[in-house]
Figure 1 (cartoon, rainbow, N blue to C red):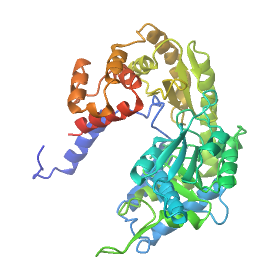
Figure 2 (cartoon, helix red, strand yellow; figure 1 turned 90 degrees about the horizontal axis):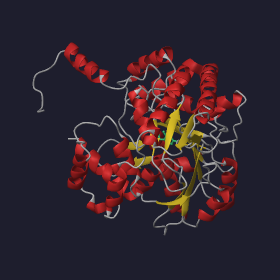
Figure 3 (tube, helix red, strand yellow; figure 1 turned 90 degrees about the vertical axis):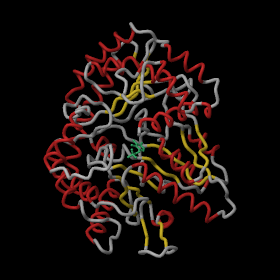
Figure 4 (spheres, rainbow, N blue to C red; figure 1 turned 30 degrees about the horizontal axis):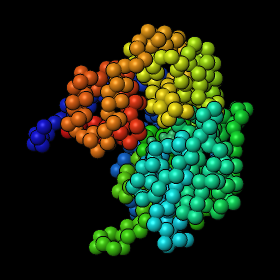
Length: 478
Ligand SMILES: *Cc1c(COP(=O)(O)O)cnc(C)c1O
């Protein structure tokens, strides 16, 4: 397509977008157990109106648009008080968990460098269950991840193992409340004690849990302390576009106090243009997502969140009981959250995902990490799919029976074994195209059944997986 000279009228533009939209999986019927956090139409519409009202406001400069400063500080104060922040807690609005995490890592890195100017490669102590965004931050910002294993029974790291991983070069310790993969909360208080003992900053990733765990606790669920009230916790990320139900593009990075926050802020006077001072990675940006997030939090309030949490907790308990009752499925760890992972005994989880897709359900597959953490099925519950649990479980039992009839060792395992003998650098575009062709797939259409692709990736070393994924994406965006 070349650059269009002819304007399209409004109806044609929107018609085109509607047609594209209609081709996406519909999430409104509650058949997706991933990606979606749905509070219902009323909250969604308030957020959409708020977004539209502030769409053209530029959050680049809060001195020119004081509404931005007002909304952001108010949102931070409200959420900090929900999450154990004292009067000295500060924070900022960002576009998502990844950006909040990026900023927390940058602040910790610069803090470490200020204390140790000779420090060449600061280290990031990460349980293997920590979100990929920390690896992205380490990659972008020049830190070395120091990986800490988790106990396969609980899927949480041992605080003593974290203590042993801390060195003089550690810039930041990370833990999750909860981890996305298994929905388990790490032992935050014990890790906080390690952080205090070693005088190292400690980030709690409450991106997914921050807006739900407090309400689960009010409902009587057993929720261990995980937030800024825990001694040793210096920063905490909480996504508003997950269980706060704001439209996407909304997260907060909270700090215990302003010590590290100073290192999060970027100022530049080394150019000829307007004065730049940014609290986030993004510079020019719409204030729409901020206004929408503020509106959602105010519209729902604690009572609204509690009602949505009750629905979610009840559905999660039915999901856990239902999954445990299916012959051949068992839970990973003991989830304290509305996200669970289940492993399969004797059949392929990837076939289950495909069989569920054929029955109208979206569930995620998670690849094996190592021998102790095998490939598994991931389910996220939210108020929008809570009413579908029983129907989903009935089809899941069916899908598992269907998967048991399908071969567990697909040809993909053999291809993976052959590929694993190559170095990652050998996995170039040509090799990928040949591979896809061999599997009857192309890089122009997404396959109907993903089992082959998933088995293939699952059979590869992690470095090879990353390389193939990059090549694939480099192919499809053309
Ligand atoms: C979603 C998530 C992130 C990353 O957030 P994005 O908003 O997708 O950038 C980080 N950590 C956890 C635990 C998450 O669930």
